[in-house]
Length: 229
Length: 410
Image 1 (spheres, one colour):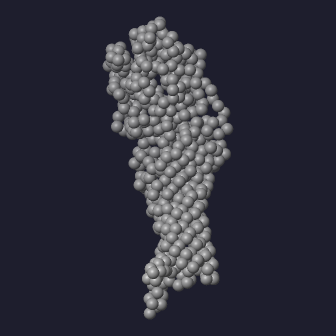
Image 2: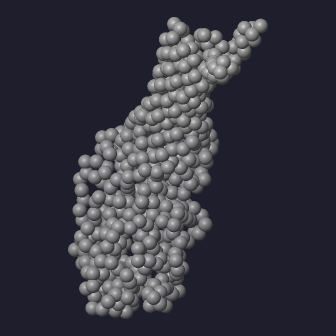
């Protein structure tokens, strides 16, 4: 077992064909986990890592609507389960992870600016000729918790994991690794609450650095030292 | 032996991991590009139905509180529209009937379907009001009779009477615009205007508003005991007038409610609630502490209702609403280019820029400062008062009487 963490880049994959001047951009986040695994053979291990992971994304309006945006910060508790296939030398080894995960959407935060229809720039005797929506209506800046809607929000996310990395083993007990991972949500971020619903999926690309210790060897070493003394 | 156990565990474990992955791998739905309502050609009824249903699904801002089952409408009405094979009068009549049935329960009380081929229209709120009260529009003597004869002649002090009528353009249509102001009993300032088009006040109504705002600023011979703003029968109009009218009675901006908009293509995709503000008027304002009574009734719509709520929320606590429950259309509305959601046109590709049908609907949902949403139900009065024909014939406006009585009691 050990500890791992790193940055990630998350995208929300959805349809915005009927939202003109709107784009969904990826946003950076972090993930921190506690990897636990069982090594069957040199080349195969089963691993999991309870992980706190952020899956953020940005909705950005463009053109006339420039200045209107919403950054979505979402925190998940994620439990992956994957097989690690490793190959290479004794100390430096490459590996590939394949598996799945379940994640619980713990909380969200939304931060952005929207045009406020009841806060007009125009006055009854002074009509502006705006070049942007925020020249027509003053913007409302917000930074608040995302209020979950039990009809809409699906807080359980299931998905697939693919990853590849390189590890370095020290004294046959400590392992340090760096890995690129892709978490592909296979379940919609929303419940199926309407016909013709545009689904939303997280696509998360992470770079993880971690260190693990082989618990069994660690304790047997300590036990041996203790016996000698 | 240990190796055999380990290999067995691996075999079983491998499938425990792999099987769910294989199942999951087939789960992701296709991200289809749901087209905008305006993107459909609209050259046949099934296409027009699909365009309308999608447009409503995406643009209607009240799905979060409206109980209409829109999926059910799809299931029921799609086959009926599929049977409409020709554009002719009988089929058009059926189509309009189906659209009316689909939308009859929508709470948006601005909501109107305008059928451009026939010139027909359907407004669900009007339909429902007439269903429950066939005399909804006829059983009140206000505004015409009361305004034309009673208020200027009986209530307004003769020497202070200012009144006039101009022609203004609201939503592309010319209409008469009347304003009346003066004092009642010397120290109660009264203002009536027929629509929110104050920026269009011309030679006849301009002096009426000038008199009113000068009076607020202290131009009356004696200090004002109260102000009465009469919005009965007022169908609404321009949002800018909110600051111009109410903002001249406050020195600082204040919040009287919240608005929210659609911010995604699915029904429950909403922006957060934004504060609905009255800003002190840029041209100057005074801190009015005298009671401000707003009169509104069942024919007060849209901006009249927003103004009523703004006056109820005046920061000095001096606002009071006297009258009857308002129409119930208080979701602010503007051109659909500005906000996700709101009004849209279908069938433009086939029928020209006016399209087959124009759907007039709110751009945003409004919530009063106390957390209540009055869309579809109307704003309830603080003090109930209603004019009757009998009272009118006897020379009394019971609502103005109630306002005067309230102000005198303060």
